[in-house]
Image (cartoon, rainbow over all chains, first blue to last red; front, side, top):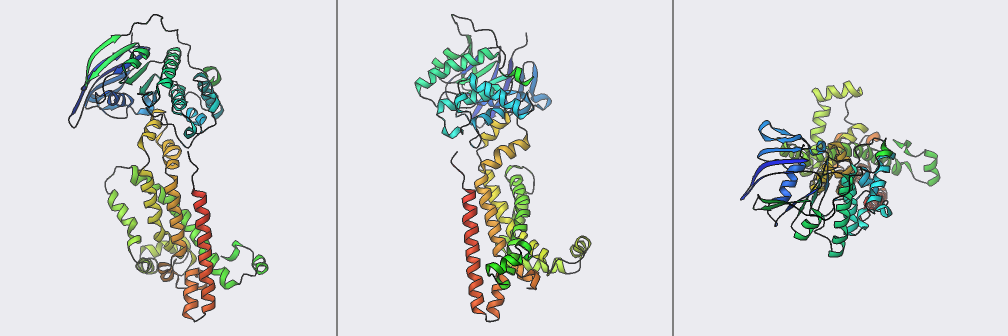
Amino acid sequence: MTAALEVTVTRHIGEFDLDVAFAVESGISVLFGPSGAGKSLTLALIAGLARPDTGTIAINGDVVTDCAHRLHVSTQERRIGMVFQDGLLLPHRSVLDNVALAVRQASGRRARRAIARSWLERVGAEGFADRRPGSLSGGQRQRVALARALAGDPSLVLLDEPLSALDSPVRRELRALIREVIISSGVPALLVTHDAEEAEELGDVVISFADGRVTGQRIVERPVRPEPPQGPPGSTESA
Amino acid sequence: MTALIPHSWLNWLGIPPWIWNPLSISLHAALEATVVVAIVGIALGYLLAKGHFPGRGVIETVCSLPMALPPTVVGYFLLTRMGGPGPIRDAEVHLFGHPLTFTFTGIVVAQIIESFPYCMRFSRTAISVVDPRFEQAARAMGLSRWRIALLVTLPLARRGIVAGVVMAFGRALGDFGATMIVSGSVPMATTMPIALYNAVFYGSHEQAMVLALVQLGVAFVILLGVSRLGKVRPW
């Protein structure tokens, strides 16, 4: 079976050396470790926002980075969805526009907006589709960011400390939502966190990072197996 | 040039031709110059802010020279290059049928060169301080470079860009030195600053005061209006 993501990379930045190799399957995999361990840099390399010095990265078997052959597929062509720590929603566009702009699988504006609306419903954000991101709370923004990351029918979702800027009650609420939405979508996800509780609660697999190295990888035992994938919403609208 | 507003309206409004003609020429030339400057200046500002190519510093310096030079020097170079024998004059004759010195188009060219650096530099600065993480997020959304520029970078930089365009318009509207030398103060190419100079030169101090006050009012109204337009509502 092809791994959802295979990473073998090195990157040298000043005093810091990143040298990691790991593979992840479906579900949510967590890169866990202290700040400065190289987790977010690894995510940036996978997204194509930075380039490794050596190594390869393959998403669903497709090689997107191969330093030996000078191959670097652009971020746009990697079909990834990304959730950033502070959402990074475009402040001058409505919530609906933010999500609709990320929809790749439909060409018409109406179809894109229909898919965007269905994703906003799925994350419980349909009520503020016409608002600007600046008027939303941090938790609401991250709901929209999650919808935006999944709306483009990605092969892989990357979440870079998506809950670290939020209050505890909101974090707990969003943890459940993130897990439910990602597992039900069937899209493999890689999440970065330095919060052990978050790693346990969200991850199917936890990959531990320290000083730019992978120090361990373990499967999280769960009493209930995740539900089978439902597929992305809006797939019928776009047809 | 006076066709911007019908003469009958001007008569009805009681605006004499010695005010309206230079005012119309000034506004018309500054508008045309600003359109050109906005398109080219924003595009070059974007390239300088985002591009990584050799000679960026040289291009920026050359395009900024009119900011540091006295306008009369710019006017002199334009007069000798556009009006004197050589390939530039030949090209003008080929394109327009006559040299551009002492014409309305010559004024527009002078104002473009005088005002271009303001738009280009304001745009470059505004674009270069846009948080690059928004552009990274847009890349992850699958947006192409063009769409990122048009949908993300330029809207986020619009405060500075609007300020640059307004500054360029103000500079074009108020230019005297370069315009005077290129236009030679012929009637069809007499702008408000030149009309004011002529009024002072010929001792018509009342006319000079009126022309000065009109320019003050026009500048105030335009800058106030555009600054209100440019005010961006909070995100």
